[in-house]
Image 1 (tube, rainbow, N blue to C red):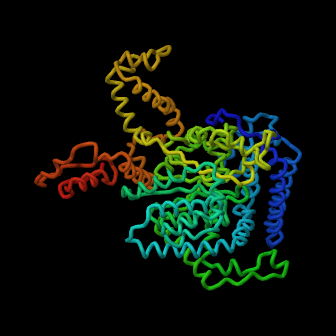
Image 2: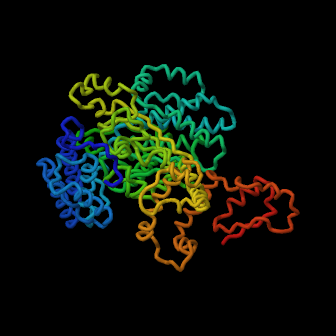
Image 3: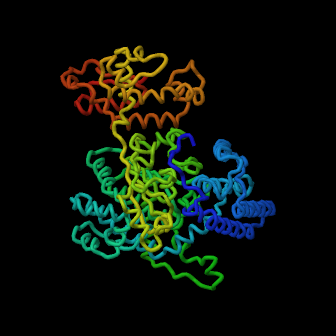
Length: 627
């Protein structure tokens, strides 16, 4: 609301939009499937209380379906223990007005509202709190992808073994770049065909693959390709010897897509392009197939015990009297190799699962920096944040009717260059919003068969045939803002700039610059920092620990986890703002070593002193204390 784009959002009342089709056709079908899934689970329970609760949930799902089909008004969501979340949803329902109804509301919010309301049915029960009504469908999609799963496991094993065997040899740079592209293409399309790139890193074989008709066709369907820039980011961090190189995945679908995401994560770690992968799943059943922590555990169990998955008949196979084909010993070993790889990465802290309930909030990611500053700060150290799938794309762009030529950096607003994030969006188009296209491309695609024509609909973007790879690079200077702002404030006080600003009325940047004899660009930059300062008292009033008698360190030490995160961030900051490089410490090298020269009173782990010592070969001539 407050932080959203002013560009009109897609609404369910627009007959030309996919939103209209969704509310009238897709959602009732999804609810019918949900009812069927719960009914199956209820029929298997032997606990009377659980059975009664299950039947009540079925009634609630049926009532919600009826409301949607008959265009009833949106109603407040009952509290389910996550009070702040529910308040946020209900505040938005209230803001839509008393007459807000299903066939005339913002598409993004109403779809999130539907799934969040469904979640309360289960959360407010005793026996069904952790039940995922879509778990069976997710695993069924993984089972049905058996040929691709086995092929990809085999090729990945070959790749890793060859990489380790040749770890000291020099690889063809062009081959590595094309392999990177291949891995991301598999991740984009969720498709494990044409995987010969994984067997070696020779340029000749890759050239043959690049000539395949299937690959050419797939590449033609990628409308925006910023992937080479993403590769350069990771490659540069690796070449610069950066010790911590993290890549975050804001996940989309479970099943085979999660499997492919894990393959990509393993590739990034094994190749050295990343030292840590953070997987960010949802916390409640969401948009049918989105990843939950339980899906991650289920996938690990599946690859650890593949025979139990692939040789046990499914419900449908049992009804048809069919038995699945036995798994070969080689295929079993390939999948177990994956499990050992992933389990090893996980145990070493290189592969981390980190849910956050904000991913199931009702609004767009335009709100994220303001509504969840803790999550925003948590994302910043990542070299790349990969947002997977269509829903994340809709949330990044505010699900708005941007002109198709709108730059991606503009369409994602507060998540853009000033956010301090490198945002990479991998998306196959399944909704109306599309940005970053060349002039005339949208019109060209509308004229293709089924593309929408002159109807005003962007139907070509509804069915996943076309894809985009958007990258938004952070403004590096935004990471320096804290240190620069302190110096700016000092300069303003020295110049008397605050005295020159009238207590009442206005003054332009240029007039103030003339008054204090300063460059106008400095005045303009500093003015931007005053906005958060204006909100600081209100922020502190709401979030402060209310212990004015305690120092910053006293408060921080009360929360060991927060203290650990703070220390980690301070250490990471040294790679961005090298404090050791601000001053000339070469004089350390000539000291006789009889007295302490440097004392660290910052309360950290002494990382600045350590770097200073290492750069000046004077480690034995310093002392590090804390205070």
